[in-house]
Length: 193
Image 1: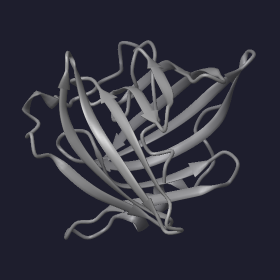
Image 2 (image 1 turned 90 degrees about the horizontal axis):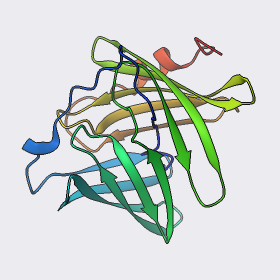
Image 3 (image 1 turned 180 degrees about the vertical axis):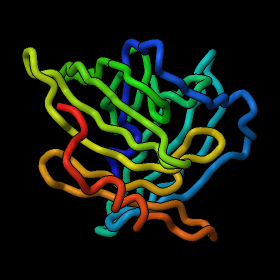
């Protein structure tokens, strides 16, 4: 699962819109999500200055586990993701969920990548395509079709990667899964290159 938290941005253009506000997040907020290889429990830890901290505990079907901390801004955009002593930073933050075109820098100890995100809303499904810069070209990396809760966290998701890999998951909840609908939206060639 878990390329999960990592869709992200640098400079928002005028058409970019992001509707979430975590200042009303309940202190007991948590949810459980699962995919074919893991179950993830996400739990709100509290605030650190202007950031909201979340613990993500992943239990894989092979018996292994991992724990991560997500640092999220007020608009539910990830600023940093730490896992097992390694960190990924997003400058200034991610842009999922959002609508429009935006750019970000994704930085780890090993790499620094310039990314471009193009998102639109179809009914209540966010369809997002991400590209990375290779010289003067933008190369398709991933298309995601995702539904989100009122705080901007994923409910159901389907992801199609440029290398052909597919990833999908859903919240453990009583509402019907929308994975079939999301798969139909995501399984096609990239809109832009």
